[in-house]
Amino acid sequence: MKDEEKWKMPHIIKIPEAFTALVDERYKREDKGTLLVFSSDYSKRYTVKSFNDGYASNDNMSYNKGILGYPIVLALILEEKLAVDRKIASLFGGTNWTEINIKYDKNFTSSMDAVIKAVSNEIYSYDLIYVSIQNVYEQLEQMLERIKRYESTVSFKDSMNI
Image (cartoon, rainbow, N blue to C red; front, top):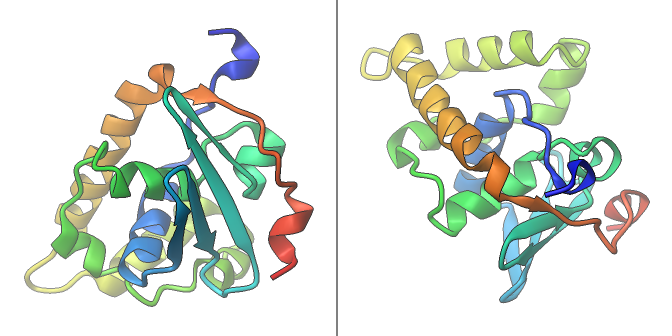
């Protein structure tokens, strides 16, 4: 693949962000190749297009920076290309990542740390949750070279016109 057809690896926070979208059912399958994903505060609607060898999405990371965004991570989870511990994913239900990322000045490491601390409990420790997220992240890292980047035909600006 040419460099412009390759996705850049996202920050690890995109894994629990995808967990939240999964658990909160903030997605709608429009047709076989199109998934609509709603942001955690429902202010944006992203369009993920899947192809035989890759994806396109109009979320900010994917569209403007070439970094694989959480809507594509969600698509990979729904297509069972990433194995996820659903019990751990369920801990992230109701998380408003937009609000949290603003609170922590878009310092994704601090945002993720605060959320993991908030959702951990006697059964699911911070370390157990983090290892589960890391496991999914490593799966993504291993497959990233095989996922072609397609340009979205839906603009990022259009994601805000809900």
